[in-house]
Amino acid sequence: MTTQPILLRNVRPVGFAPGEAKAPTDIVVGADGRISQVGSTLLAPSGAKTIDGGGFVSPGWTDLHAHVWHGGTDISIRPREAGMARGVTTIVDAGSAGEANFHGFREYCIEPAAERILAFLNIGSIGLVACNRVSELIDIRSIDIDRTVDVAEANRDLVVGIKCRASHVILGSWGITPVKIAKKVAKILKLPMMIHVGEPPPTYDEILELLRPGDIVTHCFNGKRGGSIVEDEDLWDLVVKCADKGIRLDVGHGGASFSFKVAEIAIERGLLPFSISTDLHGHSIDGPVWDMATTMSKLLAVGMPFEAVVTASTTAPMSAVGLATDDLLGIGKPAELTVFDLADSALDVRDSQGATARLHKMFEPRFAIRGTNAVAASRHMPKEGTATVCTCGAQG
Image (cartoon, rainbow, N blue to C red; front, top):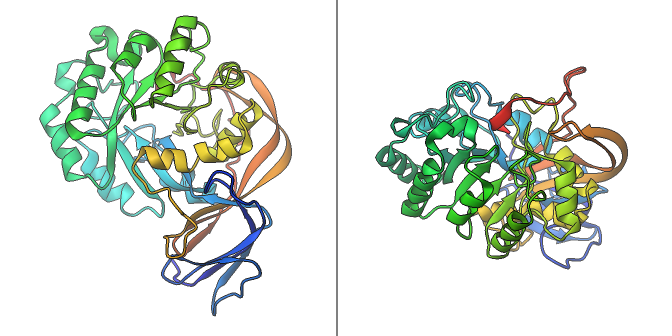
């Protein structure tokens, strides 16, 4: 990692503050990794790396739901496959590790990574070691409340909440009980819970009744029967009520948990997701998710406004995990930025149900910057013949 200053030329800030000016500007990041100047036609400091933008600059893209405990689970990818090389400066791992293996995740994955990696700790002790082949929530022996609380307390700098997957293929006949235990542990820790909604039981309605402001529902626009928010008006009304009081709806695209139809209807009716995330893992990266930029482009394609897409991919998820979001271009603030273009496109993509849509505009990441580390970024291109519909069930 270099420590040379960085000069960003001719970039248009977006996502930093509502109503901000969109005029192109220059940004200087000093050798200390902090914003030192913002203005027009700035001179490059001695020895600076100059990046000619010509497009947009936003706060660093933050993926609120991914799986990057590579080698520790059978489904996780390497952080670099989801991170700065894709425009993402912060990755939040959503429950890959439980209390029994979080120490390995920290030492071998989180600490060496160029990206900031935070984590929701799985309420199941083993996490996603053998995802969907060996459930992390078979019965009460799968949860150790004391050890989970202790691990979370010992890793307060990284653990940002508790994760629970609430699908019948994971919970079997155990029903809503693990969700209640997960919420209890989150309350003890005074942290939010991220809940995976999928194939009932338990039902979406049952789960929502347990949540409180700050909690996160991931896979909010899934198209699964019994789990879709647009197939049941009573559920729709409850979801809107919950969103209005501060329960956060997260996209969590994944291999099986995003529907163009559900997202389009919800957005047309005024229900926007709080955050956009990928649920990237080994079964979704080559189809249908690909990366953060493609997921953002899908939400833009179904009617979400451009600035709302940027906010839902930056400051909104940052706020959900306790990261500072104020005055991110202020002098002296740590630099964490994504440089990107919004390009014309004619790309056909799929959702998790196999429905196709054409993306006429595409988010194209160019650089991700953390401190003085500036990494050239681009979209992930799936291996030929692998961009298929995922059938990996409850993982998303």
